[in-house]
Each structure stands twice: as C-alpha cells, then as structure tokens.
Image 1 (cartoon, rainbow, N blue to C red):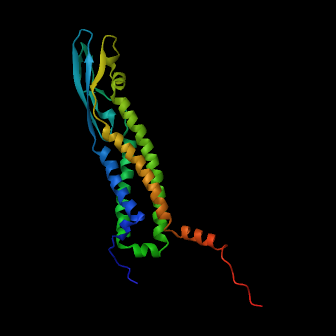
Image 2 (image 1 turned 60 degrees about the vertical axis):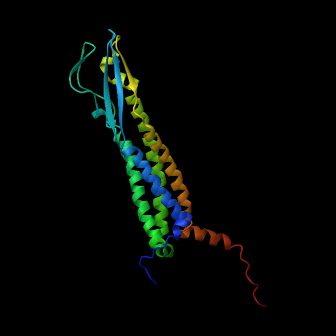
Image 3 (image 1 turned 30 degrees about the vertical axis):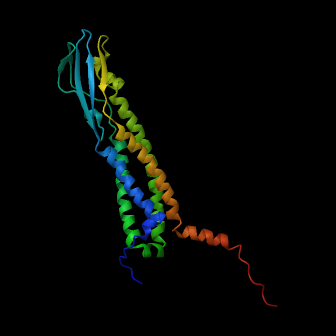
Length: 239
C-alpha cells in the first residue's frame, strides 16, 4: 500500500473538507477584523466662560488603554492646570485570547486540509487520525465559546472607557461644576462588532464540523454495528 502524498480535491466536495475550508476563511476574518484596529475619538471640553478645547485620543489593538494619554504633558485647560492623564483599563487579555484562538484555528485548518487532500487514505485507514481530529475540534468549539464571550465583554468595556461617561470619569477636570466634557466624534467600531459575531459564528461552524469528524471515528461505526447486532436473525441449528 502506498503511504505517500496523493493529491485529491474530492474531500472538498464532501462536508468534512468543505466545512474545514469555511473554518479557515472565517478564522482569517475573525482575527483580521480586530487585530489591526486603530480608532480615534475627538473630545471637546466646554469651559464655563464659553470657550472650548478639543483634543484627539487614539487607541488601537490590543487596547491597553491605560497606556493611551488623554492629556499628554502638563497643560492648562479652562484656566485649570491638568497633569498627564491616561485612559482607564487594560483589555488586552480578552482580545489577545480571541486572536490567539483564531490564529490556532487558522493553522489547524491548514494542517487538516493538507491531510484531507493528500493523506486521506491514511486518515481513514487509522483510528488515530479521526479521533485526534475530533478531540481537537471539540476543544476548539469550547475555546471559541470562551474567547468570544470574553472578547464581547472586553469590547463593551472598551466602548464604556472611550465614551463620554468614561472620559468624564477618568479626566478630573471634567468633574468641575462649570466644565463639560463630551466625545463629539466617535471612532467606528463596526469591525470590532463584526469580530464578535464572527467569533460566535465560528463556534457554531466548528460544532457542526465536530459531527462530520465524529462520523469518521470508530466510535460512530461501533455504535451502528452494535445497534445492528440485535436485529440479526441467526439460522436455526440443524436437527
């Protein structure tokens, strides 16, 4: 029996290979929509004497907002001395976890597609390949659930920290009675919202794929053979 590489595109026409290709694409979109994000909010400070000051806050992936300056360097605003002030919160862990899971899935899909397209004869002839594939797929379903939930919460925290209430709470100047702070121009976070949706979408796709991988394992074949066993009729013994 030949054990070398045998290129065949037929697995892509079956659910096992086609869904893996879809997972590869959705993983790219998942980490691509948040991994390169960069946004800018415009903050306006309205003074009691009718004047106003405007400044920009730039933040980006991985959203370590406590390293992003709101006020860079000691300055005077509305006749008040303001020291260097940074935004509040560090949300890198949730988004980096999300991106990390997406990258792992991207790499695993590439490896799995290589096996499907070139070594399917070995994959189906062994117990190890399908069982390993199923266990990894089931683990990644769980990881997608956890990382997507964590990033959804992290994204909401990022929005809260960068909106008007978050800026007003962080910047001491905004707590003065005759001064009002407001975010007058928000950065578009559409791609970040899409990344959360893609995270949960990936979870469902991988959960569906787990069934097709399970059908390739000996556990599935043994289940059906055991079900078929009691239904068999044995021929009567000769008298």
